[in-house]
Image (cartoon, rainbow, N blue to C red; front, side, top):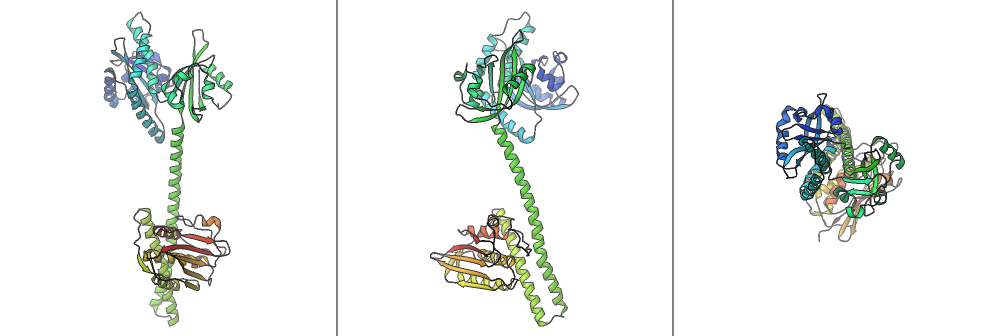
Length: 516
C-alpha cells in the first residue's frame, strides 16, 4: 500500500523484493526485477556513490535521504530521493539492505524545503536510534520460522521494509485505525509532534473524536472510494490537542484480512503549514520583484523625460543667443530662462543622487549651526528662477540659528517651491513661512492651488509615486522629489507632513531644532 518504491537487496546487490511503488516508479514488474542486480537501475557515473552508500549500510548504518538519478525501464532518467536501512538477523548481523525511493522531480522552492526537512529527519533519526532498535528487536521476534533460508530472508526484508518506511516518514504523522470501529491502534512519534497527543492518550479512542476532521467531501464518499480502490488521498483539516486547527495532506491505505474484509486503515498525514507558508513567501517575493522592476522602468522613463525638457530649452536658447540677433530684453529673458531650466535640471540631478545614496545606505546629513537668514536668502534666489510668474511671499517671524545640513535643507525647500510652482496655475501666490515654536523653528511652504486629495496624501511621499494630475494642467515628474524630501527631513529628526483639501491649496510642513 506504500506510495514509495521499496526494494530489498542482498549485500552483493541482488534484488530480493520489489513492491508496487517500485513498479510505478521504474516501470519494471516484480517478476522482471527479483533476482536481478540493482545496478540495472543505476547510471554508470553514479555506481561508485551508490556502492559507497550501500557499504555504509552493510556496516549497520542508516543512510539518506540521498538525491540521485536512476534509470527507468524505458531508458529515461528519473530524479529520486532514497534512504537505505540495514536488515539484521536475530544475532544483529546485517544480512541485507532495504531502499525506499520516491520521485523527487519538484519545483526548486519546494525541493529546497524538502531538503531542509530531510536534514531535520536525519537529526531526528540520530535521536531516535535507540527507540528504532527496540522496534527492530520486536519485529525480528515476530518473524515466522521459514523452511528455507531464502524464504526466511524475504520475510525479514518485508518486516524491515515496514520499519524503513516508518523511518523515512518519521516527520509525518502515522496512525493506524480499526476499519470497523475507527479506534486508534497505532500512533507514531510524528503524530505526537504534529497533534500534541501522546500515544497512550489516544490509543483505543475514535479518530473522529481525537482529530475532529473536516473533509473536502462527504466522509461516506471517501470511505466508498477507499473500500473500492484500497487507497484515498486528499487534504483535510484537523484539530490539535491545544484546539488549534491545521491543514494536512492525508493518504489512506486499506488492509484486508485473509477473507477480504476491511481490517485496518493506515493513515499518513503531512502538516501543510510550512509548505503553504513557503509558497506564500515565494509568491510575495516574486510579486515584489515585478513591482520593483515596473517602478524602475517607470522611473527611468520619467527621469529621462524630465531631463530632456530643460536640456532642450537650454540648448535652443543658447543657440539663439549665439546668433547675436536678439535684442537686449530678449537676450536677458533667454539668459534667465537658461538659468531657470538649469536650476530645474540641477534639482532633478540632486534628487537622483540623493535617492541613489538612500537606496545604498550611503545617505547621511551633516548638521551644523546655520543662520535662518541664509536659508531664506537662498530660497529667495531660487524663487526668482521658477517659471509661472508666481508671487513668492516670505513670512519670517523668527531669526537665529538652527541645527541643519544647509545643502540638504536647501534641497528640500527648492523641491517644495518647485512643486508649488508646477502644480498651481500661473500667477498663484506661494508662501514660505518660518515660525517660532520655542526650541524649534517650524518651516512651511504653502500654495493656493487645487489642493491634494486625501487618497493622494497617502502616497505622495512614497518613491516613484505622484498624485493625480491637476485638471487642465499636465505636470511631469519622476515621483522622487517628495520621497527624497521626507528622507532628508527624517534624517534631521523631524517629519514632513502635508495639510490640504481639494480646492484649498496645500501646506507642506517640517521643523528644525534651534541651537541652544
